[in-house]
Length: 93
Image (cartoon, rainbow, N blue to C red; front, side, top):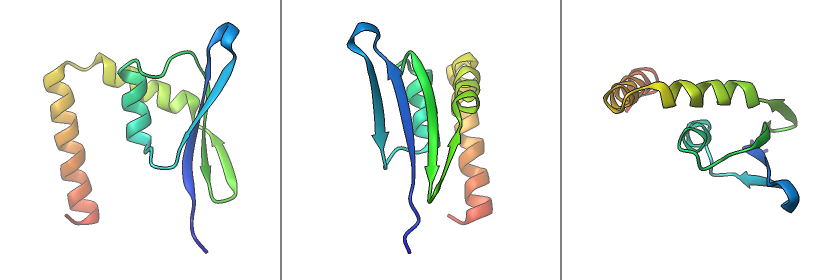
């Protein structure tokens, strides 16, 4: 059986209504980057769907995006390098 995992981002567009953005290719990091970059606004909720369970990760991802926005560009690069180094160390290159 195949394992499915994706994020659902519900945005509020006021009079135009709500829109759910569902992209199976989007990663947690990608969603955080979109929020930090201002590409996703007026978020109602973010759900992580994995197999047969749904988790509300709105607060977690919003906090991560806020922390990312507060970093200076050089700090963002250092954080990205740290993450890549940790990933290579833990999961192999």
